[in-house]
Length: 232
Ligand code: SF4
Ligand code: SF4
Picture 1 (cartoon, rainbow, N blue to C red):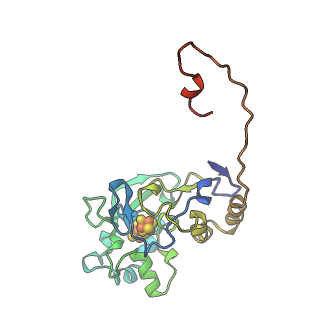
Picture 2: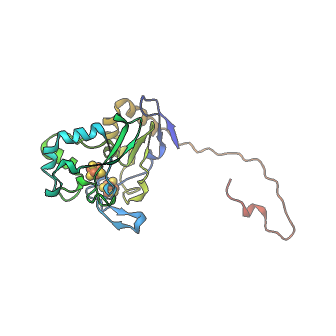
Picture 3: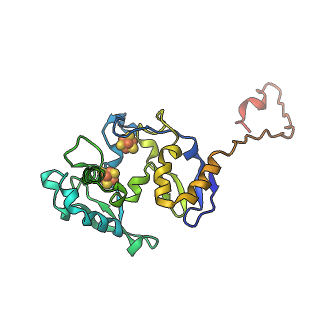
């Protein structure tokens, strides 16, 4: 259920973000692809790469030296970091298009984001480079990645479309909102957090409805009609 929000950019929020829980720490979660018989794959949500806006690509390229320093030898060249073959037109996006980060194998869109190819064990190479070189990950990490598993589009804040594809969904951590509150605040500002905090603390109302009496139709020898209907 979407709840109305009074904010310049965010007009509604999926109420499930206040209730559904998530894995508390990606770096220690043993990620599984639940739609593929629970196949183990670390950083499974990064397997397809990510959407990138043009200004985000520029921010990444400005830090090419720092990012390149943590990437594997054959990934250091920024010329291979983005898949610009099929930019997606989007009038709402800066410059009117959405690009994607490249995948390790350009012809296999499940082969993993190119920024997973770094000298650490797992996790985002952009994040890794920022921490190593002492600047905020938010400077270079695409918004879609900073918000995951929350998604944002057309004024709506909700759960990412692939939310239920991975084992972190529903894991015993905090709620999605509590986990992502900091990132949401960084991106959309403190006034939105005030709005969302208010919605989060709303008591959940469950209404008891008085149903009108149902006509009982009884056919001799037939089972009682009340047993064959779905719940009201
Ligand atoms: S969001 Fe889920 S699938 Fe992605 S790295 Fe974290 S735990 Fe793994
Ligand atoms: S940029 Fe980082 S977080 Fe985003 S898909 Fe690539 S590796 Fe994952």
